Image 1 (cartoon, chains in turn orange, purple):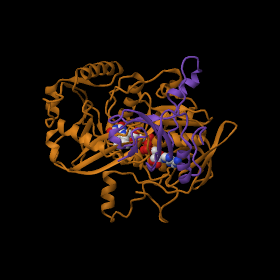
Image 2 (cartoon, chains in turn purple, yellow):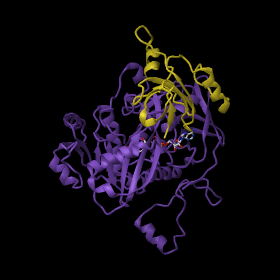
Image 3 (spheres, rainbow over the protein chains, first blue to last red):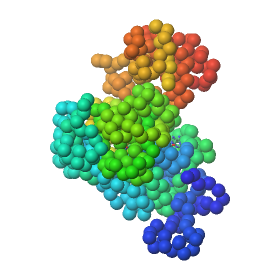
Image 4 (cartoon, rainbow over the protein chains, first blue to last red):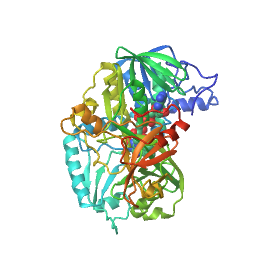
Length: 430
Length: 109
Ligand SMILES: Cc1cc2nc3c(=O)[nH]c(=O)nc-3n(C[C@H](O)[C@H](O)[C@H](O)COP(=O)(O)OP(=O)(O)OC[C@H]3O[C@@H](n4cnc5c(N)ncnc54)[C@H](O)[C@@H]3O)c2cc1C
């Protein structure tokens, strides 16, 4: 997945293949010799107009919309590891926008609607699958909570609806709705929620960024942020110093560490969140189900694996592994909800370092350092937000001020007590 | 599994026996403080990649709160100590310095 080696062209501007059925047919007649690299492997230049730290989905989408919406293409995206190797390539890919608060609904629904035709926009199949997402109500409180969210969503123009247990069973026959401990009483249903292929989202954006002339630079860790008179002037990296006019920090779990280089602190704590997948089985579930009371959620990948979201550690760490006992807690909850999976073997388990804020909402903000902007705090649920977040962050960087989508998510909300409280919108981490 | 020794009852506890309590040695600001002090107390966190001082409660044991010095990257535990102190004891700081001579934490080192 990382691209090094002499064959790799440094600059990719305009040299990209357009992917189409016609191109596949054409290449079939010439031993597939005409496929070019999807993105370049350039050496860092001395200076860029904008540097984005972090080539996860949010960093890449920010760069893409800087080019597409504002014509800013003298941009480098610096990544310490490989493309999408952070949380973007480690998440369980649930996409939904059924949030309670208006600012959240706005940015998540913007993202969800961009996902609808992202494959066409990027000319790259991100496998967006709007198969429907249901969040089970298993207590009286959840019923009331989800009915309230459904009403809020109706006002926000987000298509969701509260459904009863019979419809839950009809949409997902493998659910045990009768309990015994927590019978399914209903669910919040978002028919156009779903999943997408996580790597493809990172790769699709990277390919377009590269095609616009931007430099996606992997294996380039930022180790310092340089400044003069309160303005950012550039970064120090493992591949030398690079100057810039504007800087975007988009590093998820590592935000506190990188903010420290810029000289400010964040209201963020990093913890490991884990996920696991089972051996592949025949199709048995064509919706995403989240069971917040027993704390587990599951969907089935196109390969047939059951994709399961696990728990987050309760203590700060950067291990990309997670505590062992969460696996048992998660699997126990899911066996209760889906008894038929009790004999399944789990194939893989992994973790990502997620950036948690106090109100469980993200931060899209100017920072105390001039010219330096930050996008972080997506915590356990930012995959779904990638296109909308990139859109809003590009606007903020291009104009120097947050636009309507980002305005409410500033760092100042903590001092002002103006929280966007989504901690109860989803009891489970995803 | 993370194992911490409770400094009160001396038992080596698995993390499942403990409740994590977040960053330690935070100064509590209340009425009369500036907005910024209050925000710092409530929300701003060190969140370091490295040495972390933190609170734990021996929830399924003696019930006491205590402090631990732990590395957030390697999960190495440098020591545990009483919660009734404003900063880590010298022995814990020495244990950290022996492994990481350049460590730092706000005003403590
Ligand atoms: C197990 C798990 C399950 C999840 N499930 C879901 C889900 O179902 N739905 C959902 O919406 N969200 C989910 N999430 C959350 C989602 O994955 C994240 O919110 C999102 O991917 C964050 O994207 P990002 O681009 O901000 O961060 P990342 O993808 O982590 O990218 C940040 C990048 O910055 C790089 N970086 C860090 N420091 C430096 C440095 N100093 N120099 C250069 N580069 C640096 C990192 O290497 C990394 O590649 C889940 C997360 C996890 C861990």
